[in-house]
Amino acid sequence: MAAHPSIDDQVQSLAQQLNLSADQQAKVKTALEDQHTQAMNVVQDSSMSRDDKIQKIHTIREGTISKVRSALNDDQKKKFDVMVQQQEQHFQQTHPQAAQPK
Image (cartoon, rainbow, N blue to C red; front, side, top):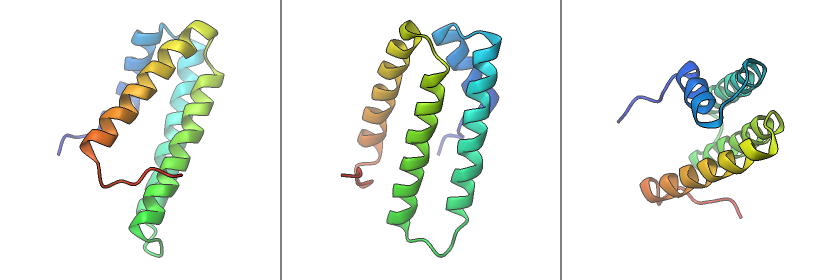
């Protein structure tokens, strides 16, 4: 399994693709760090079922997407929305068993 890019790598990638300012990069990094912390808490919670964990992490990701979008201008939002859509499609192709929330 491929290692996930670090938070700094993700920020750099978004910064390049969306031409983010230093202020925007800081907001994006905070949002990604929060997502990582919350997701790790979910993964380590042995009281939750696998389905509940998938659902919870999906909810956390949605919140992160909203936070990142709020830091972007209109032009950047359009590009970001396309990137998110492509990620979703890729995820669904590589994880067909992960049920999407209704």
